[in-house]
Each structure stands twice: as C-alpha cells, then as structure tokens.
Length: 458
Image 1 (cartoon, rainbow, N blue to C red):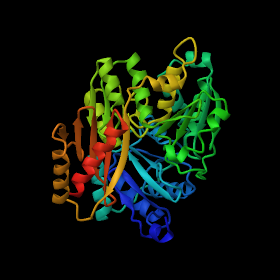
Image 2: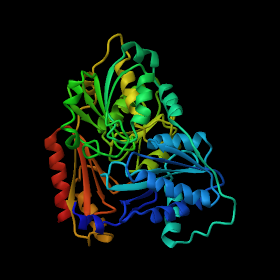
Image 3: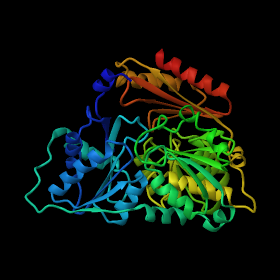
Image 4: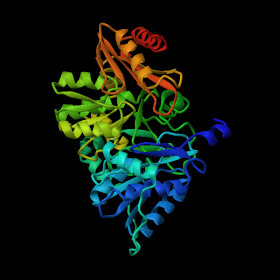
C-alpha cells in the first residue's frame, strides 16, 4: 500500500473498537477521546489495559493510562498480554472494563483498540453502539474534579495458564512429552504460550517469541502468508506446528510434515475434543465451516449459528448454554476459561487429543478424520451505488439463483443447498461483496460461487 493510500485510509470505528494507521488516522488524541467515551459508560471500578507487541503499543498504553488516571480511574496495566488474557484479568480482578491495544492480524503500521465489558468478554453490540454514539457526538462530559486514580502493574499469564491447563489431561500430555513448534509472530502469544507448554511438559520451540511487533511475515495466519515457514516444523522434528496472530486470539495449525491444515480446522478439532468428554450444544458463526456442525450431529448435540463477529457468537453461547463456540478464523471460545477467542485453549485441546492414547496420535490422523469438505472465500467488486435497496435486490437475485436451496438472512444472505452452502455479505468498509462457499468438491464450490457472482452482477 502506498503512503498516499495509507494517508487517505480512514479510521475504522465499530461497536467493538477501532483500527487505524498509527500517526495518521489513529493518534493518541483519537484513542484518548474514544476511551473517554468508553469509560463514561462504565460502572465504578478499575480499567484493565493490555497490548500486543506492536511498537506503537507503549505510546498508546501510556496515553490511555494517564487519561484514565487523571479522570480518577484506577488502571491495571498488564503490559504485553494476549487478548484472551485481558478478558481473564478483567473478570478476575473485578474491573469495570478492559481495553486491548491491538490491530489483530493487520500489518504493523496499524494499531487499534478492542473493548471489554466487566464480564471479561468483548463488548456486546448494544453497549458498543452507546460508546460509538458518544465518541461520534463528542458528548462525553468533562471529568469531575476528583483525586487521581492509581496505576498498578499485574501479570495475568499465570491465571490464564492455570485455567487452560484445567481443561485438558495434563498427566497424559506430560507422559507423551510432544515436541511443539510455535510461531508467536513477534506478538503477544509467547507470554502465555511458553509457560503453558512448559507446564504441560512439552518440548518447546518458539519462533517470533520476542513481542516487539517486528513481523517477519504478514501477520494473518493464512496459508499464503505462512508457506515459507511451514518447512521449519519438520526441520525442528516437531510433532505439530502452531501459528498465532499478533494478539493470540486465533490459531492456525500444521502437521509434523509441515502441511497446513488451516484455521477452519482449528475449531473443528477443538469441537471434537470437547464433545468427546462433555457433550453439549455448540455455537459457530454463519461463515464457519460445516465441519463443526457435522461433528455435533454425529455426537447428537445441537449446533447453533450466530451472525459473524465474536460478540455475536458469545451472545448465542450464553443464550444456548454452549460448551464451546468459535469462528472459522481459528478462534475457539471455551466458557471454562474465558468468553473470548483463545489460541491457547485451541492448542491445548489439540495436544490433549494427540496425547489421549498409549501412543502419540499424529495430527495428520486427527485431521483426516474430520468431515471432508472444500471451502473457498472470494469477493466481488461492486459499485458504491450497490447499497441499500440495490444491495437487497442483488441478494434477492442470489437467493433466486438457488431454487433448490434454503435461504436465510441472519447475516447477509446464506443459502444451504444439497451438499453445501454459500454466504454473501457486503463489506462494511470496502465496495465489495464477500462470498464464502463450502461443498464436497472444489467443482461444486466454484460452480456455486460463479452462480452467486453472476446474480450479483446481473
């Protein structure tokens, strides 16, 4: 992306937080104003602040902490901490809310803020809309003349390690002592991953362990971004390879041979592991692979579907009493630990399954047992005029193009047709329509996407 494009790129503000180019659309002043709007909605109590490893993180954390302390709020500073660890700290320290400074999988020039409610979960949509309205209207009242708050530092990693370890058979993993290769990507992941894996008795090889934001590859853990890194897994003689995004709420997985099995498989493997021990309903979003739904069907439990977005998944999990939830981007949510996407839960559950028998089960074997399906994600460039009624008409055409399917409008338009499904959603930030399709063969997926694209462009 050119400097001009960077300069012109606007701040992206949503009900769950904001994201922008540091020093351009995102400045300390912008962050402070946004957090003031957030703090004005919170009950009394301290606010937790964490950050991933980006180099702009300390600057933003210092500005936010000072603004909150000056307004009379106590601040609990976690320093570098994964996003799920922030949620645990908010809940366990009985804080009023929390802030994670991270741009998730975006490149290093970005940073952002993610907001947490006092329950230690990503802010629900209704609360997020209140914050957004206050921020956009600049209606936050001036801070009252109160005494300054306090700033304390706290290490939440030990609590996170203990919670994750309690979900798996630690003795079995220690007995097998698997060699684990992990790419923390110079983000926050190693802060919890190293002590967790060592507690589980694993032989540990961590690359990108220093949380300095000096990304050695594009930080989103996709197949294209990780291709050059996959050979490092067999070179290290590891039994499994894990890849985290910078704030460590997502996990991608590869076999001992360095074969990328991806992010979609992360949730399916976790679902299989949890349901084998604790049958109960699960929740996925409407763009997640049907592998998890099929596993739930085989286990005789319900699979409920939410709108896209972590907060929506959590809402549905709470409503359904789910034993597990998540999204196909490698985000697993285990309510026994925290109602936040958590890469550490995911990797522990995978290791638990690999170590369940008398001999170490190869990940390749576990992956081969997953329901067979092919997924493809693409996008269609559309005119900016394709909004409102025009977009609704385009979605109607997509639905009509699949007369054999069942149409659902929970989030965009989803069509479940014999042997597969397709989801069409308009981007909130770009003039594109995203299309996700899944079926038993690549030919069926390509045919479904072509049919949808033709209907959109008609």
